Length: 114
Length: 221
Image (cartoon, rainbow over all chains, first blue to last red; front, side, top):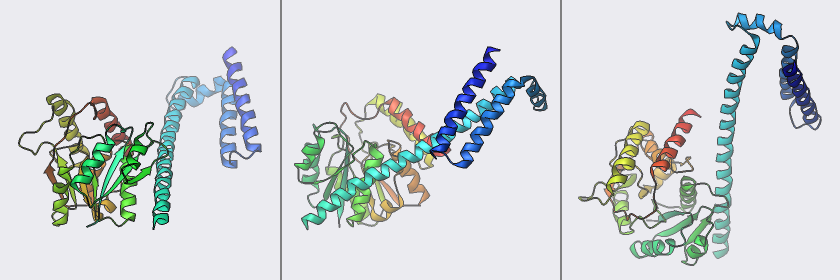
């Protein structure tokens, strides 16, 4: 099926990018193996998609594809939450830096005056 | 008493000169600190020409962040009383003497200006019932403190109160944050009637919604 081909191709592309980032040490070992596992699982589930129905039934969902969609939504919400927390922290850090520069500059002027 | 008047500004080249002059006339022995929040106009030059202290944010961070910058600087300079005063000409410098008096007398750690305590307030009806009254309700929900005015930026704080109230809300939600920290730190507070000059500036209904969003985000994160 075309959709299988698209998902597998995209997953392989993602793995290639992952390897590139791992080689230049942009990501940690833990992150590398976690993402590698995720993409390999996606490829596996795409090739043997009938088998995923068994797992889906265990969770009370009819089809494996449906389970994947539900799980994706949960994971996406979690990632968005994590991103918001991270952005909030970054915003606070930027404010601290801006404040420090503003005060330090004036302190230097004050010192030069006295 | 070492009094610091903190004036946060953003693009106020038209008003800042008159505001500084007003404060200088009414409280001549105070230290005036203008915190420029990365204005795009000539605010910083106009302010500097008035011979006062000007702190400059190199990136726009919001009014709450500017006030905290002023607070931090004032504390470093051994301030006894810190006054927050708007840079857009809404506040009247005559009121500063009244709001610092309860702190000098030891009656309060923080004094908040209120538009609604004067016999005849000049608040436009639409602003009063569609913005300020709902804001009071939300303030009560978030802080548990019942006040007569919600977002009046004119306030005076003792050194003790300034150290206890660290403003972490960079944008406009700092007003509610301050009230919440008064309650949390059990600070003695007082409301004093002040006058507000209404002009085209100030917060509208959508600014109010932004404040609620910031407060909810703070509760969740």
